[in-house]
Image 1 (cartoon, rainbow, N blue to C red):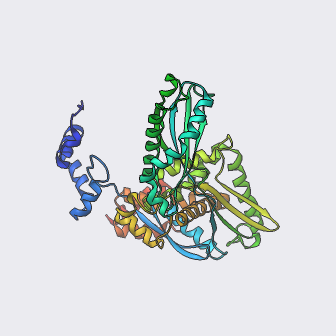
Image 2 (image 1 turned 45 degrees about the vertical axis):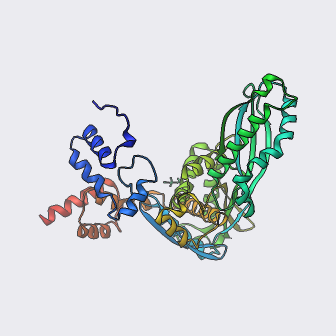
Image 3 (image 1 turned 135 degrees about the vertical axis):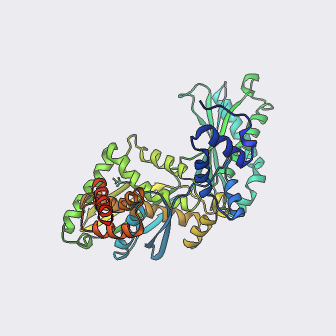
Length: 441
Ligand code: MEV
């Protein structure tokens, strides 16, 4: 029976581990060995990782791969991807190569506005509140000046603040709905600091606003927080070519491929069961680059799916058409990313990834990430509408199965060669390993 513990966060790392392994593990020493295997011998680097979060007990590795040959607006990129799913980097590389020979990806940032809100309760006359808001708005902006002045110097800052009446949804509920330009920063800290200052000024100044009654003066701030929903921080990425240039093999005609591809996208546009999987494939590419570049993939995910539902029904983030013999495939989605602040200046692999991408601005990174999503989606739909997904997936999964059975390097060589001409399935691989091992005994 496990027990609770007080003051855990104050224990040293080794004491935390001792408590954990002794409380939860049948073989405490073995558990410790596993944890230690993942420690970095470079003490400085290990300390850096220890301090990213609270109660660190070890590091959790993900592979960092790269997908070369991405031609984006006529510039070549090798894209870093941190992901555990075996087929993702291979699929991205394949799609990059395919479009490299067909003009590459064209991208553009549509907008870069971020949002934050102060949620508050006010019991009283709405018009008087509007009067108060108009009166106090310049002071809200002015009081935030110590927070915004550096951002302003670089061309960003607060864009606007609106008062929003939400009393039809919740009695007495209003918002200060603010928009921001945060340039190369993702901007969470900047926005939250501004909002907390707005809230303070808004509540305090109400106490001396003459037109308010005593009850009206008592504004209750519920919370001040950025919104990860940024439908006006939008990027578009596109590929297009003549339909006749679409195929590389004889199994399917270019026309048939284009038709099936567009049908597959149309299905994802109208059918939520398919749209979720379709968008999951897009997020395979997006999250991997977001993670490699030290950005917040949870924020990106939450926003992407809200955006995919913006018309009241969950739908595809990408679109495709054939018009006048031209195949066009594109994605338009919100991506709030940063290339300064947060992990970007701290994590050595994030710094390396950003250097690999030619030190992009946030706008450039938005375009690269959108391309990774579109490429991933292209690769998935290409397989799905031609060979089926399992052929490629299982080929990549082969190594996972071999590792599960602790195959030696020699066994891996023999079996990967063998499975070049044989369909990979879990049972077929197990059988092949057993046969190989019985022969060598
Ligand atoms: C698997 O991670 C992603 C796919 O299922 C995406 C799709 O179905 O479009 C292959």
